[in-house]
Amino acid sequence: MRFGRVPVSEAAGLVTAHTVRAGGATLRKGHVVTPEMARQMAAAGLDDLVAVRLDPGDVGEDAAARRLAERLADRPGDGSLRVAEPFTGRCNLFAERAGVLLVERAAIDAVNAVDEAVTAATLQPFRPVVAGEMVATVKVIPYAVAGDVLERACAAVPARALRVAPYRLGRVGVVSTRLPGLKEGTIDRTLRVLAERLAPTGARIVADERVPHDPASLADALGGLSRAGAELAVVFGASAIADRQDVIPAGIERAGGRVEHLGMPVDPGNLLLVGSLGAMPVIGAPGCARSPKENGFDWVLHRLLAGLAVTRADIVALGVGGLLMEIVSRPQPRDGGEPDEADA
Image (cartoon, rainbow, N blue to C red; front, top):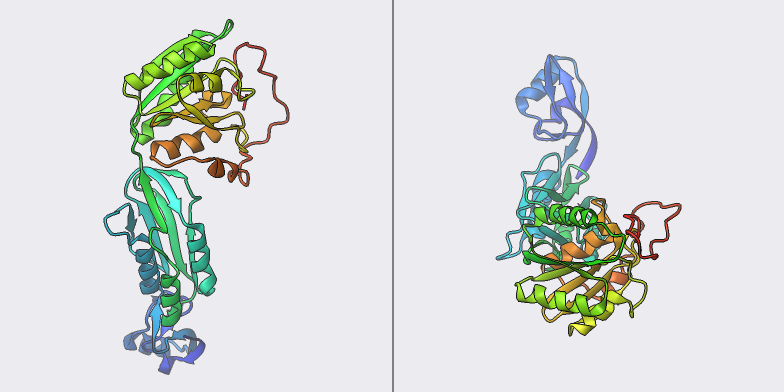
């Protein structure tokens, strides 16, 4: 591709680099100069203009952007992404269903490293998305790109580099433990907040157990959720989880389950527990999960609802970007009283 000033007499067939106005007519940048437009510009006294001449093998910006976007979305049998019509060298990709966005970061980095002429940008990996939401964009910087550059960019995209994992779990059971001073209204509000969180995913609360804050009662309640057909369990403790030997982890193990990980490098959300009871994932919710504001609980909840594993390695990798809000001070909520929303 060659970029520069050319005489108007030689401009027909070239692409305008900037908007040109002459003789009452306007030719927008990025458009091909027709012979008639070239004659109008000459008649209006325009001697030259800045234009782009494509070399053999060059691919125009829109065609190049579409091809790379289609390569990102090309997952046989997946159908989770839609490629929109390109414009001015940009081609956007949209989610075709609700779910969790999966991104192979190394693949996107590889595309962007091929050449400065080709760029791809996505939302953050594992972000919850809804149908119709834009999740990625491809932008070709110049008006055309060399064919070999486009081929290398497309070749850098492996299978399943970008897709939306659909929500798979729809039946959520909840156990709320009680201590003196914890109001029933607080538990009611907590469940309403959880129901609102679940609404975009299509999941719903199918069981609501409220039991004393002790391991035996919690273990019995978790067994009840399993028998009720819950696919995922959320435990809201009357007191924050302070240790692996505390009530909630002890209750999970007493029920025959296991604790995968306690704690996470996300604030708010530090005091979250991930475990399982048979095939049913169990989340020990941090106190901040009682609030509708985004916190680490959301990150884990959406992954599990999409049927994605949440391992210790996944959790410890959340530290970069895990500071969600500045908190100058916190109350100390381990006195057995009513939990505070800021309790991580």
